[in-house]
Length: 127
Image: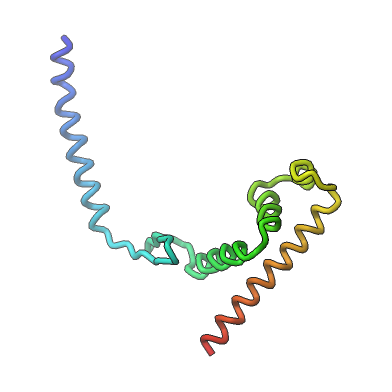
């Protein structure tokens, strides 16, 4: 009985392999432009609604964040990326919770300066 059930599954397995081969060939032959940004590749499909300028802005923010101090990176990451509250951040960093808002504001001001400096530099190189 085990042999007959294995044999009855063979046509299904062969069909599945054939379908996968065709699907893989179709995907491989579909042209998809790739935009390189530093060492990271971003796959851009024509049907994607992502605006290239949004990708460029994301990389600019990432570069600007890397230019901030470790303390600023940590606080901004905890607040924005990890969605931690002021109280949670303060407890984990062992600092008064009243200082978290001012540190976030100070770090955001530095981030803004970094981004504005980058934008002014790119405008000068274009003009």
